[in-house]
Structures are given as C-alpha cells and as structure tokens.
Length: 386
Ligand code: PMP
Ligand code: GLN
Image (cartoon, rainbow, N blue to C red; front, side, top):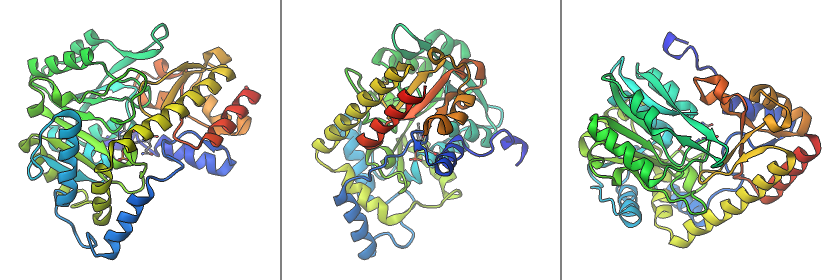
C-alpha cells in the first residue's frame, strides 16, 4: 500500500463479517438486510436481463429511465427540480459517488471537513484525493440521548484551506438526523465561506419518530454548491446491486462524471432499469419499509437496554450506537473482538470511525436491518451472556 492508503488496511466490515462466518455468530455488524428487496423489482431486473436491456455498456450518466425516475423522486418528495440530462449521474453505489466526488473536487492539500464518527470510506477517499481530513466530532449527549453537532466547533474548523464539507444525514453510525436548524446553519456557513458540499443522504427514507429528513440542497444558496448522494442499496434493500446516484448543478455533476469515467466508466446496466421501477413504487412501499424498520429498532433497542447497554435511540438509519461502559467495559475494540465467542453476536467498534479514538472507545454499533426472529435471538443471547 502506498503512503496515502497505508492507514487503511481491510475494512472493519469485512473483518467483522469474516469473524461472524468463522464463529457462526449472528452478524449485527455490517449493515446489510437479511431480506432482499421487493419481488417485483427482482423480476424487473430479470426481465431487463432477458430483454437485453443494459447487457452492453449503458450510457455514461445512467440509463434515461433511471435518471428520469431519480429526478421525479427528488421533485415529488422534496420539491427539488433537476434536469435528468445534465444534473444526474448514476454511480456504482454511493461508495463510488463519494470517491468520484472527492477525486473530482478536491485539490491535493485541500481540507475536507467530515463529521466524526465518519463512515469508513470517507477517510480513505479523502486520502486518495490527496486531501486533508478535518474531523468535527458529534458528541454523545446523554441527556438528549443523541450524538449532537456543535455548530461552533464546525465554524471553528473552517479555514482558508477548507474546500468541502462532507455531510451525512441520517448519520451512520450514530443514527443522528440533523435538524432543520442545524442544516440551515451548515448552509449559511457554506455560503458565507464559499464551500462545496457533498451530502450523503443514503438513509433518506429511514427516519423515525418526529425526525424529518430535509435535503441540504433545499436550503438557500445550496443547490448550486451541493452534490447529493443516495443509493438503492439502502432504500430498496439491494446492497449487492451497487446502484447509487448523485444530483447537483451541471458543472459539479460533469466534474464527478469525469472522475467516474475512469473509475468504472459506467454502472451495471440491467439493475438500473429495475431501480427505475423501484423509485416509482407507490408511497406505501416507503411507509411500510420505514414502519418495519421502526419496529425492528424498537425491538433491538429494548433488548440492548435489557442487556445493560446505554442505548442512543437512533432517529434515522438502521444502526443503534450503544455505550458499553454501564457493562463495566471501557474498550469497544476488545469488546467486539470477544463478543462472538462470549455471546454469539457480532457488532462494530465505533472507534474505527474516529480520529480521536479515545472519544469513540466506549461506543459499539449494532445493525437492526435483520429479521425479527434474528433480532430476538441476538437480544436473548446478549442478555444471557453479559
Ligand atoms: N454512505 C453511508 C453512510 C453508508 O452507510 C453506506 C452503506 N454502508 C454507503 C455510503 C455506501 O453505499 P453503497 O452500498 O450504495 O455503496
Ligand atoms: N454501509 C455498511 C455499514 O455501514 C457497510 C458497507 C460496506 O461494507 N462497505 O455497515
């Protein structure tokens, strides 16, 4: 590995999923559903394959049907209007969107601000782009029961070298959904300091209780400086299809497309037709999906509390971050390495998502995008073992 990537070996998700396989433990580590997305959408993919739709290189920006479905979704849901020909790009999952956006927009030495704990690919992609990551920590607020952004710390992190804010809401791994007020303050800062914004909103459809997902691009002055990222992996439970997308102003989308051309050239064709149909599903699909995940959140949160964890009940995503100190455990790494043997359950130590590892040390993440019986069994095992 070269110097830029030396600190990034195997991802924690691969390491922990391998541990789940070798120990036979229940895998609540890596975030992927154990139930595939809608049957009719799988059928749509099969149909596309059979009918020869997308079996050869599809168009660089994505197939027209999918770009039209993406812009219709943004319009219908958020009142955001994008031109499917110039303001949309289909990518190989949100992962490629993040990589291509950073490679396209960051100059070597530019500072990129990201919330800590950050999704693991952010740090690696900032490094690949030659940027310098500047973490702004979401601090655990026990009274509010959530991880909170300190707007003063964010403002203080901006320097003359800051090029870009890399935002994620709903936030993996903490489950924090930024409020309208927080987003408005971020938007004001971006405009005032003339920053680009890349906002990862892959969990846009997974918000609970009275939380609301508001795209950053809807705030004044933001549409022209913001790349918004989403993915069919999360919303439709097809993480293996790797169909993601970005929306944004034409110059930004064109720049990201230039980088994408030399990463993957295009994204897998037949799945794009199926995702176009998925985005056009009736509203009931989205409400049912959210209700199902909410029930799972409540089930796992109750089980973890029963087992002695301090639970930060997430307002969004399909992850629960816990504090393990009430169990007499100070160190999430050691805890997660021993948990499969001790309890037959795999979880992720949040410390890997921090530069300030000591701040992240006591936090451990559990995924709840699993069948009810699996979550019940995991909760039972944790209660028995801890
Ligand atoms: N961003 C976040 C915050 C995620 O949680 C994930 C999925 N783990 C991704 C991006 C990557 O999405 P995809 O699988 O579409 O590449
Ligand atoms: N996004 C998933 C998670 O946070 C994992 C995706 C991956 O393994 N790259 O668990």
